[in-house]
Image (cartoon, rainbow, N blue to C red):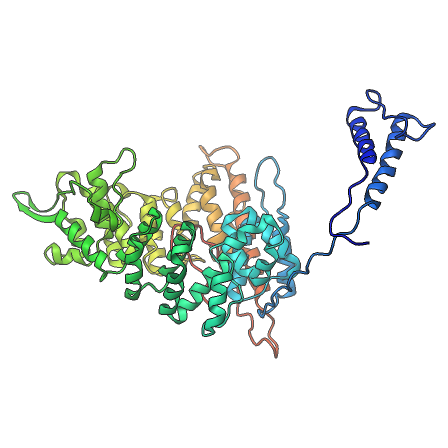
Length: 573
Protein backbone atom coordinates (compact mmCIF):
# COMPACT_ATOMS: atom_id res chain seq x y z
CA UNK A 1 0.00 0.00 0.00
CA UNK A 2 1.14 3.53 -0.77
CA UNK A 3 0.02 6.97 0.11
CA UNK A 4 0.57 9.47 2.86
CA UNK A 5 -2.97 10.16 4.10
CA UNK A 6 -5.49 8.05 5.98
CA UNK A 7 -8.44 6.64 3.96
CA UNK A 8 -11.87 7.51 5.43
CA UNK A 9 -14.65 4.86 5.66
CA UNK A 10 -17.20 4.88 2.86
CA UNK A 11 -20.08 7.33 3.00
CA UNK A 12 -22.51 4.48 3.66
CA UNK A 13 -20.54 3.14 6.58
CA UNK A 14 -20.10 6.65 7.94
CA UNK A 15 -23.87 7.16 7.91
CA UNK A 16 -24.45 3.84 9.67
CA UNK A 17 -21.90 4.77 12.32
CA UNK A 18 -23.68 8.08 12.96
CA UNK A 19 -26.97 6.19 13.30
CA UNK A 20 -25.41 3.90 15.90
CA UNK A 21 -24.00 6.84 17.86
CA UNK A 22 -27.36 8.64 17.82
CA UNK A 23 -29.21 5.52 19.02
CA UNK A 24 -26.67 5.00 21.79
CA UNK A 25 -27.12 8.58 22.97
CA UNK A 26 -30.91 8.62 22.83
CA UNK A 27 -31.50 5.01 23.82
CA UNK A 28 -32.88 2.19 21.67
CA UNK A 29 -36.37 2.69 23.12
CA UNK A 30 -36.53 6.16 21.62
CA UNK A 31 -34.58 5.54 18.43
CA UNK A 32 -34.04 2.05 16.98
CA UNK A 33 -31.24 1.86 14.41
CA UNK A 34 -32.22 1.01 10.82
CA UNK A 35 -32.68 -2.73 10.15
CA UNK A 36 -29.64 -2.92 7.93
CA UNK A 37 -27.45 -1.81 10.78
CA UNK A 38 -28.55 -4.34 13.42
CA UNK A 39 -28.07 -8.07 13.41
CA UNK A 40 -31.46 -9.87 12.97
CA UNK A 41 -33.12 -11.80 15.76
CA UNK A 42 -31.64 -9.98 18.67
CA UNK A 43 -33.11 -7.46 21.05
CA UNK A 44 -32.27 -3.85 20.24
CA UNK A 45 -29.64 -3.06 22.97
CA UNK A 46 -27.62 -6.21 22.24
CA UNK A 47 -27.97 -5.62 18.50
CA UNK A 48 -26.69 -2.10 18.93
CA UNK A 49 -23.58 -3.30 20.75
CA UNK A 50 -22.91 -6.02 18.16
CA UNK A 51 -23.27 -3.54 15.32
CA UNK A 52 -20.96 -1.09 17.08
CA UNK A 53 -18.31 -3.81 17.46
CA UNK A 54 -18.54 -4.73 13.76
CA UNK A 55 -18.34 -1.13 12.61
CA UNK A 56 -15.42 -0.39 14.96
CA UNK A 57 -13.38 -3.22 13.43
CA UNK A 58 -14.36 -2.10 9.95
CA UNK A 59 -13.36 1.52 10.60
CA UNK A 60 -9.97 0.53 12.01
CA UNK A 61 -9.27 -2.02 9.28
CA UNK A 62 -10.06 0.50 6.57
CA UNK A 63 -7.31 2.90 7.58
CA UNK A 64 -4.01 2.96 5.75
CA UNK A 65 -0.95 3.40 7.94
CA UNK A 66 0.59 6.86 7.81
CA UNK A 67 4.35 7.25 7.45
CA UNK A 68 6.15 6.95 10.76
CA UNK A 69 7.20 10.20 12.35
CA UNK A 70 10.88 10.94 12.68
CA UNK A 71 12.37 9.61 15.90
CA UNK A 72 13.28 12.36 18.36
CA UNK A 73 16.92 12.98 19.07
CA UNK A 74 18.22 11.05 22.08
CA UNK A 75 18.00 12.68 25.46
CA UNK A 76 21.26 14.34 26.53
CA UNK A 77 23.47 12.57 29.00
CA UNK A 78 23.72 13.71 32.58
CA UNK A 79 27.21 13.45 34.09
CA UNK A 80 26.03 14.15 37.63
CA UNK A 81 26.18 11.26 40.13
CA UNK A 82 23.09 9.16 40.74
CA UNK A 83 21.01 9.43 43.86
CA UNK A 84 21.63 6.92 46.63
CA UNK A 85 18.93 4.25 46.70
CA UNK A 86 17.33 5.48 49.94
CA UNK A 87 17.19 9.05 48.63
CA UNK A 88 15.57 7.85 45.39
CA UNK A 89 12.87 6.06 47.37
CA UNK A 90 12.33 9.18 49.49
CA UNK A 91 11.91 11.35 46.38
CA UNK A 92 9.33 8.94 44.97
CA UNK A 93 7.41 9.17 48.25
CA UNK A 94 7.51 12.96 48.28
CA UNK A 95 6.36 13.21 44.67
CA UNK A 96 3.52 10.79 45.35
CA UNK A 97 2.43 13.10 48.20
CA UNK A 98 1.65 10.27 50.60
CA UNK A 99 0.91 12.57 53.51
CA UNK A 100 -0.89 10.88 56.38
CA UNK A 101 -4.54 12.00 56.39
CA UNK A 102 -5.62 13.99 59.40
CA UNK A 103 -8.86 13.43 61.23
CA UNK A 104 -11.53 15.94 62.14
CA UNK A 105 -9.87 18.70 60.10
CA UNK A 106 -6.76 18.56 62.27
CA UNK A 107 -3.29 18.20 60.76
CA UNK A 108 -2.31 15.34 63.02
CA UNK A 109 1.23 14.48 64.07
CA UNK A 110 2.59 13.26 60.71
CA UNK A 111 4.97 15.54 58.76
CA UNK A 112 3.56 17.40 55.77
CA UNK A 113 5.41 15.83 52.85
CA UNK A 114 4.33 18.55 50.44
CA UNK A 115 6.32 21.06 52.48
CA UNK A 116 9.39 18.82 52.58
CA UNK A 117 9.71 18.45 48.80
CA UNK A 118 11.25 21.91 48.19
CA UNK A 119 13.70 21.31 51.02
CA UNK A 120 14.66 17.94 49.60
CA UNK A 121 15.24 19.41 46.11
CA UNK A 122 17.43 22.21 47.49
CA UNK A 123 19.56 19.70 49.39
CA UNK A 124 19.84 17.31 46.42
CA UNK A 125 20.94 20.17 44.17
CA UNK A 126 23.50 21.14 46.79
CA UNK A 127 24.99 17.65 46.49
CA UNK A 128 24.94 17.86 42.67
CA UNK A 129 22.86 14.73 42.02
CA UNK A 130 21.03 13.92 38.78
CA UNK A 131 17.30 13.21 38.75
CA UNK A 132 16.28 9.57 38.24
CA UNK A 133 14.88 9.32 34.67
CA UNK A 134 11.85 7.32 35.83
CA UNK A 135 10.80 10.14 38.17
CA UNK A 136 11.17 12.99 35.69
CA UNK A 137 7.47 12.96 34.65
CA UNK A 138 6.30 13.18 38.26
CA UNK A 139 8.89 15.87 38.96
CA UNK A 140 7.71 18.00 36.03
CA UNK A 141 4.08 17.49 37.06
CA UNK A 142 4.92 18.71 40.57
CA UNK A 143 6.71 21.76 39.17
CA UNK A 144 3.75 22.51 36.89
CA UNK A 145 1.40 22.51 39.88
CA UNK A 146 3.66 24.59 42.16
CA UNK A 147 5.55 27.59 40.82
CA UNK A 148 7.66 27.75 43.99
CA UNK A 149 9.18 24.39 43.05
CA UNK A 150 10.15 25.31 39.50
CA UNK A 151 13.67 26.75 39.94
CA UNK A 152 14.94 23.88 42.08
CA UNK A 153 12.94 21.21 40.21
CA UNK A 154 14.25 22.30 36.79
CA UNK A 155 17.80 22.52 38.10
CA UNK A 156 17.47 18.97 39.41
CA UNK A 157 15.79 17.70 36.21
CA UNK A 158 18.64 19.12 34.14
CA UNK A 159 18.95 18.74 30.40
CA UNK A 160 16.94 15.52 30.36
CA UNK A 161 13.98 17.24 31.98
CA UNK A 162 14.13 20.01 29.40
CA UNK A 163 14.32 17.42 26.62
CA UNK A 164 11.29 15.55 28.01
CA UNK A 165 9.28 18.75 28.46
CA UNK A 166 9.19 19.23 24.67
CA UNK A 167 6.85 16.24 24.30
CA UNK A 168 4.09 17.37 26.66
CA UNK A 169 2.30 20.72 26.26
CA UNK A 170 1.54 20.74 29.99
CA UNK A 171 5.27 21.07 30.67
CA UNK A 172 5.89 24.00 28.36
CA UNK A 173 6.61 26.18 31.39
CA UNK A 174 10.00 24.43 31.58
CA UNK A 175 10.90 25.57 28.08
CA UNK A 176 10.39 29.22 28.97
CA UNK A 177 11.57 29.13 32.55
CA UNK A 178 14.04 31.79 33.59
CA UNK A 179 16.20 29.14 35.20
CA UNK A 180 17.64 26.54 32.88
CA UNK A 181 19.65 24.66 35.46
CA UNK A 182 21.25 21.52 34.10
CA UNK A 183 21.07 22.53 30.45
CA UNK A 184 24.13 21.22 28.62
CA UNK A 185 25.83 24.29 27.20
CA UNK A 186 28.71 24.53 24.75
CA UNK A 187 32.11 25.63 25.97
CA UNK A 188 31.98 29.41 26.31
CA UNK A 189 35.25 29.53 24.35
CA UNK A 190 33.65 27.81 21.34
CA UNK A 191 32.41 30.95 19.57
CA UNK A 192 30.66 29.08 16.75
CA UNK A 193 28.71 26.75 19.05
CA UNK A 194 27.80 29.62 21.36
CA UNK A 195 26.49 31.71 18.49
CA UNK A 196 24.48 28.80 17.08
CA UNK A 197 22.76 28.10 20.40
CA UNK A 198 22.12 31.79 20.91
CA UNK A 199 20.48 32.04 17.50
CA UNK A 200 18.55 28.74 17.57
CA UNK A 201 18.15 27.68 21.20
CA UNK A 202 15.09 27.66 23.42
CA UNK A 203 14.60 30.67 25.63
CA UNK A 204 15.69 28.80 28.76
CA UNK A 205 18.84 27.65 26.98
CA UNK A 206 19.61 31.18 25.82
CA UNK A 207 19.20 32.59 29.33
CA UNK A 208 21.53 29.93 30.71
CA UNK A 209 23.99 30.51 27.87
CA UNK A 210 24.04 34.26 28.48
CA UNK A 211 24.85 33.67 32.14
CA UNK A 212 27.62 31.18 31.32
CA UNK A 213 29.24 33.43 28.74
CA UNK A 214 28.92 36.45 31.03
CA UNK A 215 30.76 34.62 33.81
CA UNK A 216 33.68 34.04 31.42
CA UNK A 217 33.62 37.11 29.17
CA UNK A 218 31.25 39.95 30.02
CA UNK A 219 32.03 41.82 26.80
CA UNK A 220 31.17 38.76 24.69
CA UNK A 221 27.87 38.33 26.57
CA UNK A 222 26.92 41.94 25.91
CA UNK A 223 27.86 41.54 22.24
CA UNK A 224 25.54 38.52 21.99
CA UNK A 225 22.69 40.41 23.58
CA UNK A 226 23.22 43.55 21.54
CA UNK A 227 23.32 41.58 18.30
CA UNK A 228 19.72 40.36 18.61
CA UNK A 229 18.31 42.97 21.02
CA UNK A 230 16.07 44.82 18.60
CA UNK A 231 14.46 41.58 17.37
CA UNK A 232 13.69 40.10 20.81
CA UNK A 233 10.19 40.15 22.29
CA UNK A 234 9.61 42.72 25.02
CA UNK A 235 9.20 40.09 27.75
CA UNK A 236 12.37 38.35 26.59
CA UNK A 237 14.31 41.62 26.55
CA UNK A 238 13.18 42.16 30.12
CA UNK A 239 14.41 38.72 31.22
CA UNK A 240 17.74 39.08 29.41
CA UNK A 241 18.24 42.50 30.97
CA UNK A 242 17.40 41.11 34.39
CA UNK A 243 20.17 38.51 33.97
CA UNK A 244 22.71 41.37 33.97
CA UNK A 245 22.14 41.79 37.72
CA UNK A 246 24.73 39.07 38.26
CA UNK A 247 28.16 40.61 37.87
CA UNK A 248 26.76 44.07 37.17
CA UNK A 249 29.61 46.51 36.54
CA UNK A 250 30.45 49.81 34.93
CA UNK A 251 31.14 48.01 31.66
CA UNK A 252 27.38 47.44 31.34
CA UNK A 253 26.58 51.14 31.53
CA UNK A 254 26.68 51.99 27.78
CA UNK A 255 24.29 49.14 26.94
CA UNK A 256 21.95 50.04 29.82
CA UNK A 257 21.96 53.71 28.79
CA UNK A 258 20.75 52.68 25.34
CA UNK A 259 18.07 50.51 26.95
CA UNK A 260 16.67 53.64 28.62
CA UNK A 261 15.18 54.46 25.22
CA UNK A 262 13.54 51.03 24.81
CA UNK A 263 9.94 50.96 23.58
CA UNK A 264 8.90 48.84 26.59
CA UNK A 265 8.27 50.76 29.81
CA UNK A 266 9.23 47.73 31.92
CA UNK A 267 12.54 47.40 30.11
CA UNK A 268 13.25 51.09 30.60
CA UNK A 269 12.43 50.84 34.30
CA UNK A 270 14.70 47.82 34.76
CA UNK A 271 17.57 49.50 32.91
CA UNK A 272 17.18 52.57 35.14
CA UNK A 273 17.13 50.40 38.26
CA UNK A 274 20.33 48.63 37.23
CA UNK A 275 22.06 51.89 36.42
CA UNK A 276 21.06 53.37 39.77
CA UNK A 277 22.76 50.39 41.44
CA UNK A 278 26.05 51.54 39.80
CA UNK A 279 27.03 54.47 42.06
CA UNK A 280 29.46 55.88 39.49
CA UNK A 281 27.06 55.72 36.53
CA UNK A 282 25.90 58.85 34.77
CA UNK A 283 22.29 58.07 35.67
CA UNK A 284 23.19 57.72 39.37
CA UNK A 285 24.89 61.11 39.15
CA UNK A 286 21.85 62.69 37.53
CA UNK A 287 19.55 61.19 40.15
CA UNK A 288 21.88 62.33 42.95
CA UNK A 289 21.77 65.90 41.65
CA UNK A 290 17.97 65.84 41.49
CA UNK A 291 17.54 64.20 44.91
CA UNK A 292 19.98 66.48 46.77
CA UNK A 293 18.25 69.51 45.25
CA UNK A 294 15.12 68.34 47.09
CA UNK A 295 16.66 67.77 50.55
CA UNK A 296 18.83 70.23 52.50
CA UNK A 297 19.79 71.06 56.07
CA UNK A 298 17.73 73.71 57.82
CA UNK A 299 19.32 75.21 60.95
CA UNK A 300 16.49 77.03 62.62
CA UNK A 301 15.20 77.89 66.06
CA UNK A 302 14.06 74.30 66.60
CA UNK A 303 17.50 72.90 65.81
CA UNK A 304 18.96 71.26 62.72
CA UNK A 305 16.38 69.56 60.53
CA UNK A 306 16.15 68.03 57.07
CA UNK A 307 14.06 70.33 54.90
CA UNK A 308 12.29 68.80 51.90
CA UNK A 309 11.12 70.53 48.74
CA UNK A 310 9.59 67.89 46.45
CA UNK A 311 9.76 68.25 42.64
CA UNK A 312 7.02 70.33 41.06
CA UNK A 313 7.13 68.60 37.67
CA UNK A 314 8.37 65.44 35.99
CA UNK A 315 10.16 66.46 32.81
CA UNK A 316 11.13 64.31 29.83
CA UNK A 317 14.68 63.80 31.10
CA UNK A 318 13.38 62.44 34.39
CA UNK A 319 11.05 60.05 32.56
CA UNK A 320 13.92 58.84 30.36
CA UNK A 321 15.88 58.08 33.53
CA UNK A 322 13.12 55.81 34.78
CA UNK A 323 10.90 58.16 36.79
CA UNK A 324 7.26 57.18 36.29
CA UNK A 325 5.21 60.33 35.89
CA UNK A 326 1.73 59.06 36.77
CA UNK A 327 1.37 58.16 40.46
CA UNK A 328 -0.74 55.25 41.73
CA UNK A 329 -4.29 55.97 42.80
CA UNK A 330 -4.41 57.92 46.02
CA UNK A 331 -0.77 59.01 45.87
CA UNK A 332 0.27 62.64 45.42
CA UNK A 333 2.41 63.45 42.38
CA UNK A 334 5.13 65.36 44.21
CA UNK A 335 5.65 62.71 46.90
CA UNK A 336 5.65 60.02 44.18
CA UNK A 337 8.38 61.81 42.22
CA UNK A 338 10.43 62.56 45.34
CA UNK A 339 10.41 58.92 46.41
CA UNK A 340 11.67 57.75 43.03
CA UNK A 341 14.50 60.30 42.96
CA UNK A 342 15.74 59.52 46.46
CA UNK A 343 15.45 55.76 45.87
CA UNK A 344 17.63 55.96 42.76
CA UNK A 345 20.29 58.28 44.20
CA UNK A 346 23.48 56.67 45.58
CA UNK A 347 23.33 56.61 49.37
CA UNK A 348 26.94 57.74 49.46
CA UNK A 349 25.90 61.29 48.46
CA UNK A 350 23.94 61.98 51.62
CA UNK A 351 26.78 62.11 54.20
CA UNK A 352 28.62 64.63 52.01
CA UNK A 353 25.46 66.62 51.34
CA UNK A 354 24.21 66.68 54.94
CA UNK A 355 27.25 67.87 56.85
CA UNK A 356 29.34 64.72 57.08
CA UNK A 357 26.81 62.86 59.21
CA UNK A 358 26.68 59.07 59.38
CA UNK A 359 23.71 57.10 58.10
CA UNK A 360 22.34 56.71 61.63
CA UNK A 361 22.68 60.44 62.31
CA UNK A 362 20.98 61.32 59.02
CA UNK A 363 18.05 58.99 59.71
CA UNK A 364 17.70 60.50 63.20
CA UNK A 365 17.32 64.05 61.82
CA UNK A 366 13.83 65.56 62.21
CA UNK A 367 12.18 66.21 58.84
CA UNK A 368 10.09 69.29 58.10
CA UNK A 369 6.50 69.48 56.94
CA UNK A 370 5.58 65.83 57.43
CA UNK A 371 7.94 64.46 54.77
CA UNK A 372 9.72 62.03 57.15
CA UNK A 373 7.73 58.91 56.20
CA UNK A 374 8.20 59.49 52.46
CA UNK A 375 11.91 60.28 52.78
CA UNK A 376 12.67 57.35 55.07
CA UNK A 377 10.68 54.92 52.90
CA UNK A 378 12.72 56.00 49.87
CA UNK A 379 15.97 55.52 51.79
CA UNK A 380 14.76 52.04 52.77
CA UNK A 381 14.22 51.13 49.12
CA UNK A 382 17.61 52.57 48.21
CA UNK A 383 19.34 50.53 50.93
CA UNK A 384 17.71 47.35 49.63
CA UNK A 385 18.54 48.13 45.99
CA UNK A 386 22.14 49.06 46.76
CA UNK A 387 22.64 46.28 49.34
CA UNK A 388 23.93 48.81 51.87
CA UNK A 389 24.15 47.16 55.29
CA UNK A 390 25.12 50.37 57.13
CA UNK A 391 22.01 52.19 55.98
CA UNK A 392 19.89 49.09 56.61
CA UNK A 393 21.05 49.01 60.25
CA UNK A 394 20.29 52.70 60.66
CA UNK A 395 16.82 52.37 59.18
CA UNK A 396 16.00 49.22 61.17
CA UNK A 397 17.10 50.68 64.49
CA UNK A 398 17.29 48.59 67.65
CA UNK A 399 15.06 45.49 67.59
CA UNK A 400 13.42 46.45 70.89
CA UNK A 401 11.98 49.71 69.49
CA UNK A 402 8.29 49.34 68.52
CA UNK A 403 7.99 49.29 64.71
CA UNK A 404 5.51 52.17 64.65
CA UNK A 405 8.05 54.55 66.23
CA UNK A 406 11.21 53.14 64.68
CA UNK A 407 13.70 55.28 62.76
CA UNK A 408 12.97 53.94 59.28
CA UNK A 409 9.69 52.24 58.45
CA UNK A 410 6.90 50.57 60.38
CA UNK A 411 6.21 48.16 57.51
CA UNK A 412 7.30 44.65 58.43
CA UNK A 413 7.59 43.78 54.74
CA UNK A 414 10.07 46.64 54.22
CA UNK A 415 11.92 45.67 57.40
CA UNK A 416 12.26 42.13 56.08
CA UNK A 417 13.88 43.48 52.92
CA UNK A 418 16.29 45.59 54.99
CA UNK A 419 17.18 42.59 57.12
CA UNK A 420 18.04 40.62 53.98
CA UNK A 421 20.98 42.98 53.36
CA UNK A 422 22.62 42.04 56.68
CA UNK A 423 24.97 39.06 57.24
CA UNK A 424 23.15 35.88 58.20
CA UNK A 425 24.25 35.70 61.84
CA UNK A 426 23.47 39.36 62.48
CA UNK A 427 20.08 38.88 60.86
CA UNK A 428 19.24 35.95 63.15
CA UNK A 429 20.30 37.79 66.32
CA UNK A 430 18.26 40.87 65.38
CA UNK A 431 15.11 38.82 64.76
CA UNK A 432 15.65 36.82 67.97
CA UNK A 433 15.81 40.07 69.97
CA UNK A 434 12.75 41.38 68.10
CA UNK A 435 10.76 38.27 69.07
CA UNK A 436 11.84 38.64 72.70
CA UNK A 437 10.58 42.23 72.69
CA UNK A 438 7.44 42.01 70.56
CA UNK A 439 6.41 38.34 70.33
CA UNK A 440 5.90 35.98 67.43
CA UNK A 441 2.83 37.53 65.83
CA UNK A 442 4.86 40.54 64.65
CA UNK A 443 7.86 38.48 63.51
CA UNK A 444 6.43 36.10 60.90
CA UNK A 445 7.61 38.06 57.84
CA UNK A 446 11.01 38.65 59.43
CA UNK A 447 11.54 34.93 60.07
CA UNK A 448 11.15 34.19 56.37
CA UNK A 449 14.40 35.99 55.45
CA UNK A 450 16.62 34.31 58.03
CA UNK A 451 19.28 31.81 57.00
CA UNK A 452 18.36 28.13 57.20
CA UNK A 453 18.71 26.24 59.44
CA UNK A 454 18.02 28.98 61.96
CA UNK A 455 20.99 29.93 64.13
CA UNK A 456 20.80 28.75 67.72
CA UNK A 457 19.75 32.12 69.26
CA UNK A 458 16.89 32.48 66.79
CA UNK A 459 15.72 28.88 67.12
CA UNK A 460 15.76 29.16 70.91
CA UNK A 461 13.82 32.43 70.78
CA UNK A 462 11.11 30.93 68.55
CA UNK A 463 10.74 27.80 70.67
CA UNK A 464 10.63 29.84 73.89
CA UNK A 465 7.89 32.06 72.48
CA UNK A 466 5.86 29.02 71.39
CA UNK A 467 6.31 27.51 74.85
CA UNK A 468 5.07 30.71 76.47
CA UNK A 469 1.94 30.63 74.30
CA UNK A 470 1.48 26.96 75.19
CA UNK A 471 1.79 27.65 78.93
CA UNK A 472 -0.72 30.49 78.61
CA UNK A 473 -3.32 27.97 77.42
CA UNK A 474 -4.18 29.68 74.14
CA UNK A 475 -4.96 27.66 71.03
CA UNK A 476 -1.99 27.04 68.70
CA UNK A 477 -3.94 27.92 65.54
CA UNK A 478 -2.89 31.57 65.60
CA UNK A 479 0.72 30.33 65.55
CA UNK A 480 0.26 27.82 62.74
CA UNK A 481 2.28 29.94 60.29
CA UNK A 482 5.22 30.18 62.66
CA UNK A 483 4.93 26.48 63.49
CA UNK A 484 5.05 25.68 59.78
CA UNK A 485 8.19 27.80 59.37
CA UNK A 486 9.74 26.08 62.38
CA UNK A 487 9.13 22.69 60.77
CA UNK A 488 11.09 23.82 57.71
CA UNK A 489 13.73 26.04 59.31
CA UNK A 490 14.62 24.86 62.82
CA UNK A 491 17.84 22.91 63.04
CA UNK A 492 17.04 19.16 63.14
CA UNK A 493 19.29 18.97 66.19
CA UNK A 494 16.55 20.74 68.18
CA UNK A 495 14.31 17.65 68.08
CA UNK A 496 15.64 16.16 71.31
CA UNK A 497 15.17 19.41 73.24
CA UNK A 498 11.60 19.68 71.96
CA UNK A 499 10.62 16.21 73.16
CA UNK A 500 9.68 17.72 76.53
CA UNK A 501 7.00 19.85 74.86
CA UNK A 502 5.19 16.96 73.20
CA UNK A 503 3.48 15.90 76.44
CA UNK A 504 -0.06 17.13 77.06
CA UNK A 505 0.07 19.75 79.83
CA UNK A 506 -2.46 19.97 82.63
CA UNK A 507 -5.21 22.47 81.85
CA UNK A 508 -4.86 25.56 84.00
CA UNK A 509 -7.61 27.93 85.04
CA UNK A 510 -8.53 30.23 82.17
CA UNK A 511 -6.97 27.98 79.53
CA UNK A 512 -8.91 27.28 76.36
CA UNK A 513 -10.61 23.86 76.53
CA UNK A 514 -8.53 21.19 74.85
CA UNK A 515 -5.71 23.62 73.98
CA UNK A 516 -3.12 21.40 75.67
CA UNK A 517 -3.95 18.45 73.45
CA UNK A 518 -3.69 20.62 70.35
CA UNK A 519 -0.28 21.95 71.43
CA UNK A 520 0.93 18.43 72.17
CA UNK A 521 -0.10 17.36 68.69
CA UNK A 522 1.58 20.39 67.08
CA UNK A 523 4.88 19.77 68.90
CA UNK A 524 4.77 16.06 68.06
CA UNK A 525 4.43 16.99 64.39
CA UNK A 526 7.30 19.47 64.72
CA UNK A 527 9.57 16.89 66.32
CA UNK A 528 8.71 14.18 63.79
CA UNK A 529 9.31 16.64 60.92
CA UNK A 530 12.72 17.62 62.28
CA UNK A 531 13.70 13.97 62.60
CA UNK A 532 12.47 13.24 59.10
CA UNK A 533 14.53 16.16 57.77
CA UNK A 534 17.59 14.72 59.50
CA UNK A 535 16.89 11.32 57.93
CA UNK A 536 16.44 12.91 54.50
CA UNK A 537 19.77 14.65 54.85
CA UNK A 538 21.55 11.45 55.86
CA UNK A 539 20.04 9.62 52.89
CA UNK A 540 21.53 12.18 50.51
CA UNK A 541 25.07 11.76 51.83
CA UNK A 542 26.80 9.07 49.72
CA UNK A 543 28.43 6.16 51.44
CA UNK A 544 32.21 6.35 51.65
CA UNK A 545 34.06 4.20 49.18
CA UNK A 546 36.89 4.18 46.63
CA UNK A 547 34.71 6.04 44.11
CA UNK A 548 33.11 8.35 46.63
CA UNK A 549 35.37 9.44 49.46
CA UNK A 550 32.77 11.70 51.05
CA UNK A 551 31.45 10.48 54.38
CA UNK A 552 28.55 11.37 56.59
CA UNK A 553 29.62 13.83 59.28
CA UNK A 554 26.42 14.25 61.27
CA UNK A 555 22.94 15.65 60.92
CA UNK A 556 24.10 18.82 59.13
CA UNK A 557 26.18 19.15 55.99
CA UNK A 558 29.16 21.48 56.63
CA UNK A 559 28.82 22.96 53.14
CA UNK A 560 26.64 26.07 52.74
CA UNK A 561 23.15 25.63 51.37
CA UNK A 562 21.02 28.07 49.44
CA UNK A 563 19.83 30.96 51.59
CA UNK A 564 17.12 33.41 50.52
CA UNK A 565 18.14 37.05 50.31
CA UNK A 566 14.55 38.33 50.18
CA UNK A 567 11.30 37.90 52.07
CA UNK A 568 10.49 34.52 50.63
CA UNK A 569 9.98 31.27 52.59
CA UNK A 570 13.32 29.52 53.08
CA UNK A 571 13.64 26.09 51.53
CA UNK A 572 16.84 24.37 52.59
CA UNK A 573 17.10 21.30 54.73
